[in-house]
Length: 137
Image (cartoon, rainbow, N blue to C red; front, side, top):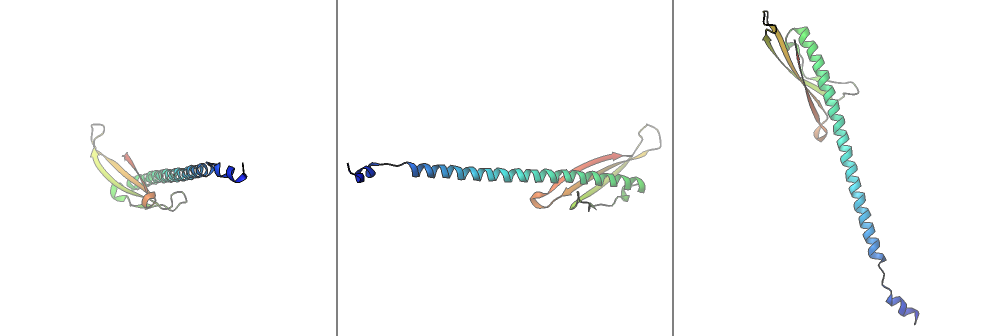
């Protein structure tokens, strides 16, 4: 047996196995990157949604105070924009309706207000909007 004939008879599987392993690892890296990106987007939207809820609640609180001080829904100024660090870039848009009703069955009728505050934060795909409704008299 000569050394040259033994080399010719060797059949290797190293290259196909190496290519398969590299392909599987590359796909695994791509899938992990997509999962990470999706998770980051979900967290960002959750934060924006929470900020929008806080903006809606803040707008509702200010709107209730303005309506009670003014004695009617016309005393409410809308929209409210926020400049504090937690709500920067958010705003609250408020609508108000009032009806007169006798709550105890006796006169005089009382004004019952329904204030709807819509909090909005973010832009484009990162935008969140939450609505808070408050009834007061």
